[in-house]
Amino acid sequence: MRYLKPSSVEEAADLLESSQGMILAGGTDLCVYMAEGVVDPEALIDIGDLDAMRGIQAAKSDHGDVIRIGACTTIAEIATSEALPTCLRQGAQAVGSPQIRNLGTIGGNVCNASPCGDTLAPLLTLDARFVLRSSGGTRTVESGDFFTGPKQTVLGPGEILEFIEIPAASCARASAFRMIGNRKGQAISQVNAAVSLTIADGRMSDIRVAVGSVAPIPLRLTKLEGVLDGQPIDDVSLAAIREPVLEGIRPIDDVRSTATYRQEVTVSLVFDAWAECVGRASGEGECR
Ligand SMILES: Cc1cc2nc3c(=O)[nH]c(=O)nc-3n(C[C@H](O)[C@H](O)[C@H](O)COP(=O)(O)OP(=O)(O)OC[C@H]3O[C@@H](n4cnc5c(N)ncnc54)[C@H](O)[C@@H]3O)c2cc1C
Image (cartoon, rainbow, N blue to C red):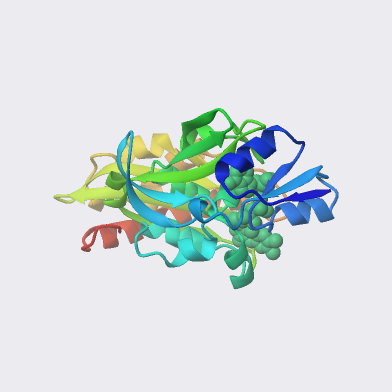
């Protein structure tokens, strides 16, 4: 196996196109797959040290003001960045252990595309966009169009996730993330949920709700969003959200939990995240 260390994302894209290689970022997923014999790439293209693919900064994109996150920014950096909305920080804080968060990257979490990835529901609620680089240039994909199945995405064979962009407008909304796992520590999410919204005069608007680990891909609960949009916050209850939550999800039995358990827990996690948002919506600050 060849180990290749490009000095730019453009070089990485050229190497990816001209080889049978795979991108290596933090390696916390890929090295496990290699050790288990799930993949056996001809070359590893290590982008983990590319400074141009790291960091969190305000930027202007074709779509307006955004916060731009380099794909190789570590989960630990995401977890502690005050520049980022709360739900994304909380999602990053839920990932693995300090060792995993220090090595693992947000780009790796996204491209690994596990339905239970803890940054994915937050990115969906924030209307994140993914900037993909190939030897032919870049294209931008909405986060809601990126995931196509468990561990499957629209990423082409020669494409690299270069940046994640979060619209500034999404940062102005209050947001929160919840997950449940078998135990504290390195438990993978059995279910996770993120909510973001705006409240004015006691009514909700701009609501986004997304859940993970309850369908083949992380997904938005658009029916629930429609039910809540414009409603007074006082009208929301566990009973009121139950049916639209259950209609939106397709959980399965697996080693971590049963479908029935996931259904019950999803309703509660969404409600808890919503309640935290409502509390935070009255707070001050740019990213909430
Ligand atoms: C013990 C343990 C505990 C874990 N706990 C959690 C958890 O609680 N929650 C959670 O969500 N995850 C968890 N993970 C999974 C993993 O740590 C995360 O998914 C992490 O963010 C992956 O990032 P990485 O940089 O290590 O990716 P890598 O392993 O380097 O790459 C993962 C995949 O994405 C591809 N890839 C990486 N970056 C790019 C890019 N920029 N462009 C294109 N393709 C790319 C690689 O080719 C590979 O296929 C855990 C893993 C371990 C080993």
